[in-house]
Length: 410
Image: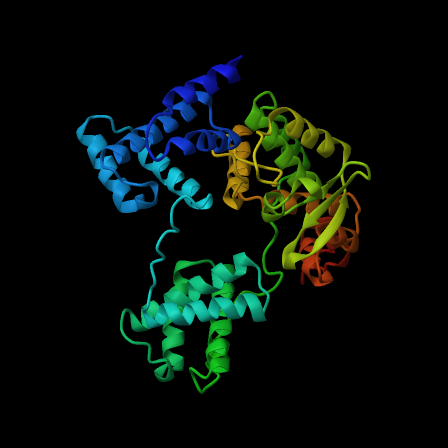
């Protein structure tokens, strides 16, 4: 009955004008994105008003673009009908009309600055010739863009004039504003950019060899972790009665029981869940696909979330936003889930990201007698040396091999 009333309300909005044929389709798309009927009606009311505005000015649908839309919004503002969400709705409408071929694609702003052209070529190189992931490409481009802007600004690129001093000044300033771990990423990205320039003939000297390393000694720190009782307390404090709580509980279990990375949770797709075999396909680093067993409690939480609260939407991602538009969570969303869970549990560790639970799982398994090779298999480390960091937290095992302090009684 509610669906019938909603359809009738949308029909009432239809009237003369070039957008008359688009109202029902636009409403259907909004419904698929999880918008409430009242919100859909308000958005379609704006569309109907725009259709009448075009009709009065004898404009065809093909004349609609950003400039016409700004004129319509100014007219609506003068009439006192402008609402807070109208600009966002207008952008949604333009995207819908372009996706369905009703109006011409948006004119692409072409940046003809030499730096933009070089970075565009660098992006193509990273994707097609090196096959890097999108996240890595974005990170490398950001470093290259900052370097070119700092060295040349809006001036012409004189890449052959680059010297080692230019690189060193940039690196020193970058290291001062980021952590040492991120500083290593900056060095790696800049080396990749310089070797690209050398390959393309833009520079004649292999300046990548002049870049210094960042003083971060391997195994120099302890992995941040929570003791098992705090991990269980964190899970127990999750509100499993609310829709978002059921989703967050499933995410936290994947992090705490299987040690998944935040990005692996974000990119999990519906087809990655093999319910018959009780397995989960993990889309790991380096675009690798690996299978892990699905523990009973994790599977039950996932099934409850999928069956009871996951909103219907077009995306194949497992974890989506609970509010419209319903789309896949961003990686920052998983970190926010962990931070909210820590706050609810009254915990304030130094590290509050998704990796905290991954470290906690490995540390707990080691203290319960698991070997480093077994932990490395669970965490899907490529190299055994990556897992060696956890040997430093096994205090009892370290006591056996510790040498007595000079001058002590032992």
